Length: 192
Image (cartoon, rainbow, N blue to C red; front, top):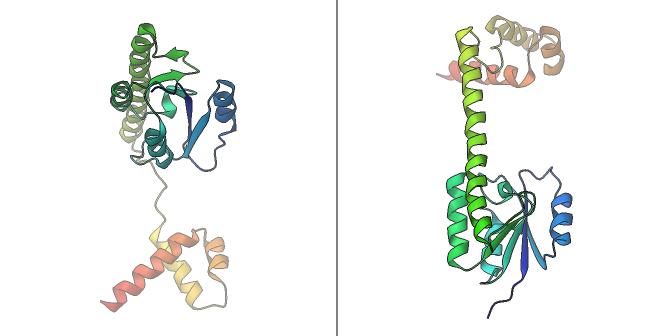
């Protein structure tokens, strides 16, 4: 017996991001139940996604605001579509205006998934090309290394004065975390 419920799924990548816009769109689309995750789509385990899959039934429509809320790659998207198709569950993506209750919707979702995957790959290629260009210019990326002479100078002042670590680090121009890592390394080498 098919329920024909609209079940919504909303996801943001971090707990600092807000779900309100997605929730408003899903409610406006007529979702009777909505599951929400605040976790990266790259993560294998999404607790609310798992609950949604337990809840949803044949004939129901899974509603999302956009494809990227549901999957992390083309392969993952196609896996999800296959799982839902086998369970007789349709997908409706609001932004892309896709509805898999139609043949056109099913074809279009595959095309959109391929385009999303291409965009991610192009971004990764541009990032890699940028790193390679920087490396060719002698730039290694990341933070510049702290001069060991400065760290040693900070250690001597810290151990032979009444100044706090924060005061010493500020005066010498080194980070406190870097300074304490250096101090730990010195103590470790003295024990050996």
